Length: 356
Image (cartoon, rainbow, N blue to C red; front, side):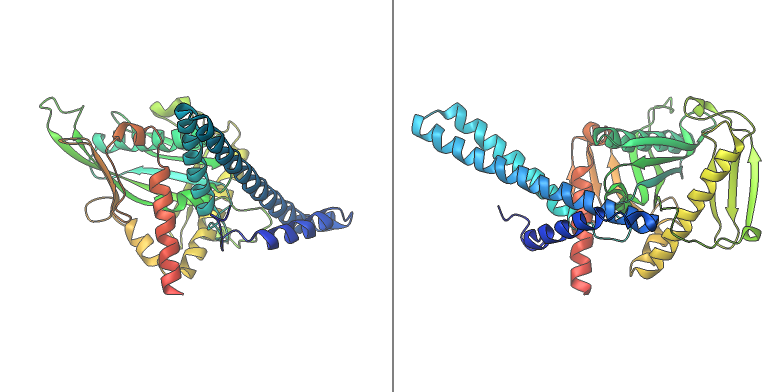
């Protein structure tokens, strides 16, 4: 099975796993805890990739054998079952091929995902809540862990802003291309005249970084405010005076946490979020497309959207970068995002290769 040829180097992968196994058996490994964690993480990722490759290879061999047997017995139903199995194997191999391209410095990390309502008032707040639900459903389907850090309810409905932490395999690598403005066109449920409205919301995605990564933050450059969490989002947040907001004055970055009853815990979580935001900002400066990413966040409105969700007068969700289109809007809004995420990743890899 060579569907990963050139991307997943089988021989070198096996040699590297042997090296890592030998290293992890060394009792002195944990003398350097930070390096030990990195070694163990690499070993786990490589072990998982090798096992997945073996499983796919065995399943493919089984499916081929089943087809040969079914053809001998002229069993059309069995042939159809085997072909369906091969189609599933092909799709899983395609996803793993793309995952093999997640070689960025932070692609394997967990991620903070922010949603902010934009142009459109109550409509935009409702749209922001729909987007939050979409990403939560996507994460749930992947069996990822979700934690709410901050949520500010809209004045009438929906949410003005929310920050969640999504923990799982390669979360940041898959979601980082979702950052930008998302546009919704629909018949407004808040308009008694049933007119069509256009709403905007922005998505921000930032990696969760390890404690051993040193980020120098001058606390005199930060303003720390405490406040009481309020609004209709109380099902996810704690309504006490323990909420913490940190503003990094040089960059204008603002982070908030109100998920814990302890102000100390919220403060600690907020500092970690700020650390992640500043680290990601530094990484962006090294990338050729950093400026375009920042420009996409300057105005949550016309001319900056990365994806359009049209629910009226027809059903069409289109990514404006990869041109991927889906007509099953309900499935997408229920978290079926893999086609968009895969296309965005493939597009980025293609651009990187053309520039190198």
